[in-house]
Structure formats: C-alpha cells, structure tokens
Amino acid sequence: MTAAAPEAATDFPAIEHLLRADDTLASAQARLGADQVATRILPGAEGEEYEAWVLYPQDPERQAVASLDEAGEHPVAIVVENDATDATSAWVRADGVRLGLSSTELETLNGGPFAFYGFGWDYGGTISDWRGGRLDPGADRVAPAGLCAPVFAEGAEPDGYPTGDGEFSSDLPVLRAHPPTVCRFVVEVAGVPAG
Image (cartoon, rainbow, N blue to C red):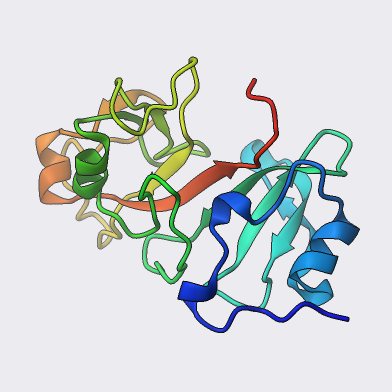
C-alpha cells in the first residue's frame, strides 16, 4: 500500500522530520510512498557525481534531495535547492530559512551580516560563517545555505559584485542594491552525528 501524499503545503511534515538517520530506501518509500523516493545519480561539485534519493521527484513544491552516507544506505542531509529564478519550494527550515529569501532578509533572521563565498564557481554563494548570529549552529559548523546572484543582462553585472573563491560580507553596498537570494539550504537528518 502506498502512503498518501499530503495535499497542501500546510500538510507537509516538518522537513527536519521527513527522514530519519536509520532510514533505508525501503523504509523511506514505505513511509512517503514508493513513487515519492527515487534513487538518482546527480552531478556534484568539481565535475563529480554522487548517488542520492530524490524525494517527491514529480512535485516541484516538495522536491528535495537526500544526501547519503558513504555506504549509500542511509540519509545524512536533505538538500532543497533551485535556481535564482524559480523559488517554488514550500519547504521552510525550522529557523525560518527558505528559498527565495533575499540576503537582507537572511541577515534579519540571523540578526546581523554573515560571510559567503563569491559567485561564479562550484561553491559560489555558499554561506561560510554566520558570524555568531542566530543561524549559527556553533561547534565550528555552519548550517548550510547558499545564495544565487540575480540574473544580470550580459555585461550589466555591477562593479564590485562578489565573484570568485574569496569570502565576502553580506552587508556590502552592492548587495544592498542587488541582493542575491537563498537558492539552496540543507537540513541535517536527525540522529546523524555532527562532524
């Protein structure tokens, strides 16, 4: 018997409780529905590929990716992402982080500026330091989230827009005028040891 899928975003389970650390593909499919959890080989950073579970693969509002442990058997994190122009996901992290938030709104949630890597490379837009703000999980870890730059017409990117593998502050004046938006966030699966 296939589990019934929620009808509306308000019926979603909290994303933090969607999967458990001891889940297998079979247990996740039994709980969420056999057609709601699919294995896929996905492109990763630096041209690599990795095996993952795609959750709700036919539903853009609920689609997410479960990153797996080294053995490829159990989930360790849930990734929700899109590109800068398509903020359709209804998932919201418990701390309020969601797709489509501007960097200014993210600063407000955090209670101050944060650092991120410049755009235009594999790790571009990744938050690197919450600088002790409310979104800082502590213990030398960063609650993963990523930003996407606005889409600029060719040659129209403003001077000083943060690009490259350096760290930049979210309170730069050019970002106030042209704020990037959250296009990726990660939730650790409950019961997975931090490390």
